[in-house]
Image (cartoon, rainbow, N blue to C red; front, side, top):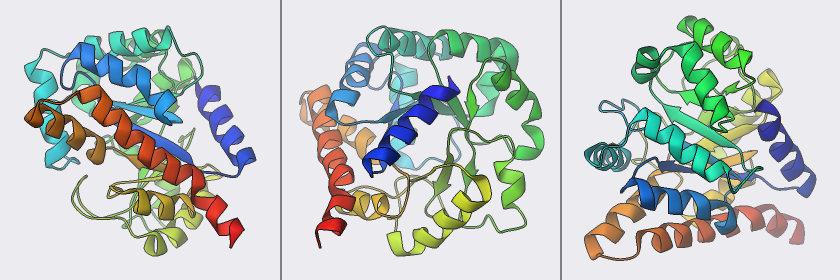
Length: 276
């Protein structure tokens, strides 16, 4: 539901801090462990959850998320399985916004209207569809609007003032600002470079702006949290899954420990500014 996202950003704004948004891949490394991770995210400090649905050709993703998708697909994760995970999570958590993030082809196969209804019934609040350009997004936006789900769009460093109104049209919940040119998990975000773009997108859209791509450490997360309304971390978390598997460690514990360290950095970022 759109209002679950709106309420969360309003509450965090009242607290004077940015949202910490965690991205995890549904079904990675398997459905049972993925559900454990999902259920543990809010307690570890996640304010909003992005739940990736695995796809064989994730164009915007770097190697870490590509490998996460491959692990999930190899274990039999499907789009129906993603909704089942979301529904199981929602049984124990009525408040944390959950946003699906993925690609157009599986949604076309399912049918936009049918998928929007099924996603809403599973407790999903919005969608980021990476490869659906705004010029072709009207049918998807109509389907999501009909069931009160947000369509969250991406703005990038190459989105100029002429293009920005097109990008943000029919966007709700928040705008996802991609901090670097390129794919996920490769370059590092720079807060001083990002800050003016965040302000520009926020002014144009009237919505909160969450920044993702290239946020790997607590230090970078804190710096972004000082200039944005939300901080999105994904590749750094799926890397923890891969490393835990390689070392035969507890996957859930390792991921949630990483979430906790990043969440603390985001929560304390602006407090350190006021203390100076």
